[in-house]
Image (cartoon, rainbow, N blue to C red; front, side):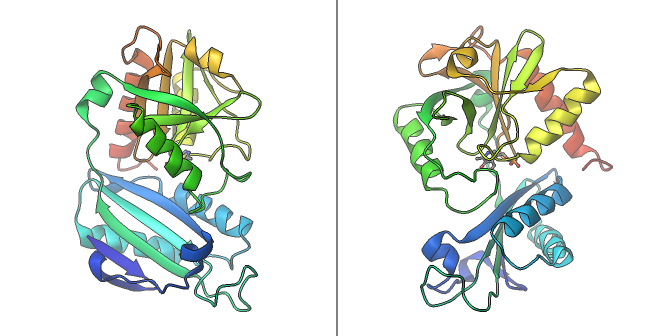
Length: 282
Ligand code: PLP
């Protein structure tokens, strides 16, 4: 397990960040999480694109994309972990605590590489249980910042209530996404997922699955739907870099579809796995 700190690679437990790092004091930092599957990093360029968009939205100085990419690959290679997760965090640097941006911003770039625990087999054979919760996050859920308190509190509430994850519902009753995943429902032959707005994160896995579905002739509607429509769906799945494709078979105590993981979850998962294993894939 290794860390990268402003150009230097070191054992993870030796990496130290100053107490006045703005990421630590204000959540003033962007992040990404890239996964390696079977020793191959997946969709690195898409993650770098999103990181650039987050940094732009936060008015950070532009990213040295080549340097970040090189660090990701070096860290992954040096760690030698087949199923690895690379966490990347870029803060607005270290400065005496003050809300205003520091006069000169020197971003602090931090990465860690660790094994990603395997998906518990019962999550795939039985599906997971979820609860719905009012979305209490801020208004820019489309960028990936480390201000994750609403996500953290909601995940813990789900676990404390015996479920595995929480699904955020907007004030208009719209189903948005999970605490660290996007959400799709299947009704009949069609899939539905929330459109790309400031209310959800534009997931890389979501985008990859949309592409696959177009290729395979599966219709996906990017539209708003409510909790009632989700509960009445044939299948519900969560998607994400770590989540991959996770079937949800119980929501707020209601059984979804026939109460078992459905065929679409299995197909999406298999397609995603095949793409991740493809040396010519993203
Ligand atoms: N939505 C939220 C709130 C997330 O935190 C994540 C991933 O961390 C996702 C969706 C899925 O995004 P991706 O597929 O890029 O991992």
